[in-house]
Amino acid sequence: MTGSALEAVLRRDRWIVGGAIAIMIALAWAYVLWLANDMDMGGMDMTGFRMIPAGIGIMLPASEPWHAIEFAYVFLMWAVMMVGMMAPSAAPMILMYARVGRHGRAQGQPFAATGWFAAGYLLAWSGFSLLATCLQWVVERTALLDSRMAIDNHLLGAIVLIAAGVYQWTPLKSVCLAQCQSPFLFLMRHGGFRGDLQGCVLLGLRHGGYCVGCCWALMALLFVGGVMSVMWIAILTLLVLFEKLPPVGRWIARAAGIACVAAGAWMLVSPPQ
Image (cartoon, rainbow, N blue to C red; front, side):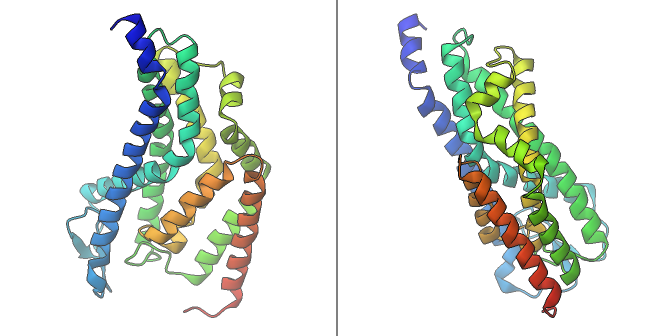
C-alpha cells in the first residue's frame, strides 16, 4: 500500500475502529439475548431444575453437580456478557489509543496495535469472568441461586446491595474511576502508545485492571437482579457508561451507591417475598 493510500485509511481510523467495536458489541448483545430467551423457556416452572446457558435448552436437576462443559458454558456467558456491557464505556479509550497511534510510533500498523490493546483490556475482564463463574458455582452449590441465576436469599441479596453501594464511595473506586474517565491522561501516565505486541497487551491489561477495580461491585449486582435479566444487564451497562463521563460520573457513581445502600436497607426491614 502506498504512503498516500495508507494515510487516507488512517485518517478514517475512528470510523474503522469504532465500527469494529460496534460490531463486537452487537454480537455480544445478540448472544446475551439468545441465552436469555433460552433461559426463559416460555415461563415454564423450573423448580428443582437449572438451565445451562448454552442457548439450546439444556436443563439439569438442581442437585446434580456441575460438569466441565457447564463450567465452560457459564464462563462463556460471563465473558461475552462483559464484552457487551463494558465495551461501550471502553470505546473512548480504544479510539484514543488508535488516534495516538496514528500520530505516534505506529509505523503503518496502528490498527493491529489497537487490536492487541483491546485484547489486553478484554483479557482483564476474562479473568473477572472466570472468578464470577467460580463464585456462581459456589452460590449455586449452597442452594442460594434460583433458576434465573439470582440470589434466592433475602439477607444475602441485601448484603450484596449494601456492600456494592458502600464500595461506590471508597477511595479505591475513585482512583480506578479516574483512570477510566481520562483516556489521554491514562496513556500519558503509563508511557503513551506502545508499538510492540507485548506492550500493547500489557497496557490494555492495565487499563482493564483499573476498569475491573472500578466496576466489579456493580457486576456483582447481577446476582441480585438475575444474571440473565436483560433489563438488569442494560441498566448496569448504562450506569457504567454514565459513570465514566467526566466530571459528572463521580457523582453518578456516588448517587448509585446511595441508591444501592437504600435498596439493601429496605430489603433488610421488609418481609421476604
